[in-house]
Picture 1 (cartoon, rainbow, N blue to C red):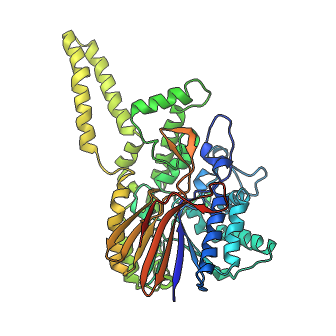
Picture 2 (cartoon, rainbow, N blue to C red):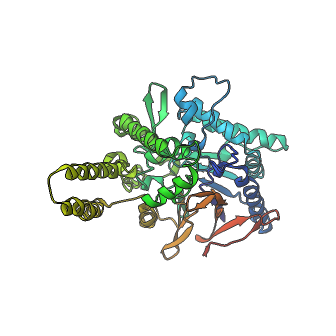
Length: 479
């Protein structure tokens, strides 16, 4: 029978905040994607009806749909303990607190919830594949918050849907011979989980998601440096661009860039070190988790294990790279050079030597150091993921492999009749750290149809353009 899939990823919806000075502008109501997303679902189901295909459509929400890391709000009258630390940096990722955060986000996105409810009431299905920023959906109590919100929205319009119409996947969604969907963070060691099927560790606050470095950085660092856009990569700059950014946004305000950077970096590294042993310890039930995942996907356990072997270890196995991402190594090098320059100035040596060594030898040594330690960066995953997708397609025999995570929309042919698709993002984008000049994301979606074992696919972008549901700005088309 003909099968049809609609795939989106990286919506990054969160609670709404408004600030007059452009602080955290990416959370502003002007970047809400709810209406456009609703138009997309409405138009997709309308076209399906016009084509005369009675088979239900499957909407794959392929990770980072809700961005828990951006929610810093806390309840006014909490039913659970809230520390002073959480009031400043956001609630810890425990089941109860994550459920509250999701309810807070959904309350700010009623149009989004109604759009999903209508889609389900029309007889279609939803598969929610978890990414790194919505890993808190791992808890069944958090999943229940979403299911209850969808059921209430459907009932309010006289609709209903069976519980099995919504499916949650902690790792991937697979249909034999057709499609493999995974968020993709497992191939990015800044954002991957050591044990993706069991990301919970025991802490003094109870069972908690062991967040990877990228998520911790968003919570404790980027989230309190509100003129940086956490959805973009343009905050990875050289020292001169950072200085320019500081002069423009922080130098003449009460907000601090340096203090938040130093303290946030310390918090991230401390958290990674604190949980490192527990994160890397294999859960006692992990073989059972793999067996359960294999049964759900109707795959041999060996195939699921082979998929796991494609994943590099998290960055916590290479802690120098963590320190380097927070510029700790460069601070140490700068301190050594500064101390050496002062010491040289105090020694009874010729003046030319006191000047030439700091001005020539130190810069040369620094460039040599940078060349020697240059390695993987946050951009490495963009280059390597198509090769991973090719191996997955070969291993499972699917026609379409689709990831999100990188926010880079593209279609890459892997073999005859086999394609890899990165579904981009709906999150707002910025240029040169200017959050005030942010613009909507590409709002990409992938539509795949299977007929007679052959796939036709289209990766496109959705914009309302002043009318209800007018697709435009095509990014790529492949068939």
